[in-house]
Image 1 (cartoon, helix red, strand yellow):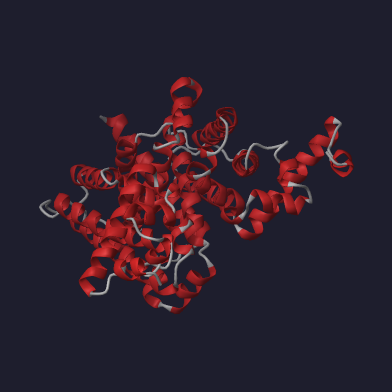
Image 2: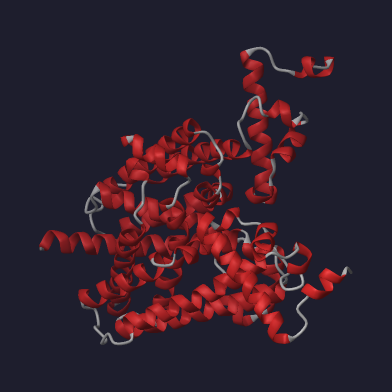
Length: 231
Length: 231
């Protein structure tokens, strides 16, 4: 070990936490700027100004860093749902309540582009290159967030059972991930969309598309629930 | 150029087509066996038994090969929809017709694991590393398939307008891609699901989940359409 490395290594617990936060912060900024798929472990280390080997004392892999950012993003997203729905009164099957839920969810996703980008990468890449303990920790966070979000939905729309509210939340989260990718094409593809009317319908505007799909899902779940109750 | 390379190079048009098919076939088999994300250009070349440089005479990039396989998969999927729906009589808003449409679509996706895997990779990776001409060609195929599938849906369920039927098809295709990834976790994650009851609800069984979501979407679209007509 060289003297420089010995000097740079964080020794005290609070130094270690600071270093950890700096790594997460660098990964967050790079991913926001250039997209999750382009960010490498070496790129994160360079942004923090440390060696890749030093970074690996804090995180197992690039994927673990992003899985931690995804867990953080679920918690932030839940706060936005609470802010939008906590004061709403239970509206039974009224269209106004479903429209409010759809709008709050659509904005909670669309206002968080990094969260949406991460959601598409999670099952595809992030959960595949980390230890069982890291993925277990992540899964408990994401399942907890889905449950908490579903409880909010079921409170505002009492016609829905918890299982149906959970279906709504999980389906919309999957869609938010894939639709964000479609809504944010590579520059060459965006140019193609703009220049070719035959391709115009392939464009997606994220917030209105999510809001509309959320409304359809809620209407469908309420119709299916109603059928189930009457039979 | 060595004599061996000159000998191996396909000269006649039918030889070139054979070589092209062999490359696509090798990529298809590797992706089916190990998943799209793990297959590299070098791996495909090794499977065909040619040099990577020889492969690049036929395809621009790894992504172009997989985009071509995705286009082929859309056409194969459309044939399955025709087989399942061409003989169905228009059923207006009857629940039986919607259940049939949901079932045919769910099976058309779930019976085609490579198609589902490719659908998740398309906006994330495949459309980002090919020429504008290649992505344009692909997009026209996929948009054409969505339109053709939507026309089948609108014929069996005349209560839906074409735009609504297109929404149904595009939403279900996005979900098929992301749900397939969740339904097919890495071995370490699958083990974790099996061993930890707290994570059991994170498991997804693809065909029933797609069938159920298709039914919800169709019920929601029909409810929304009915509201639109009555107002």
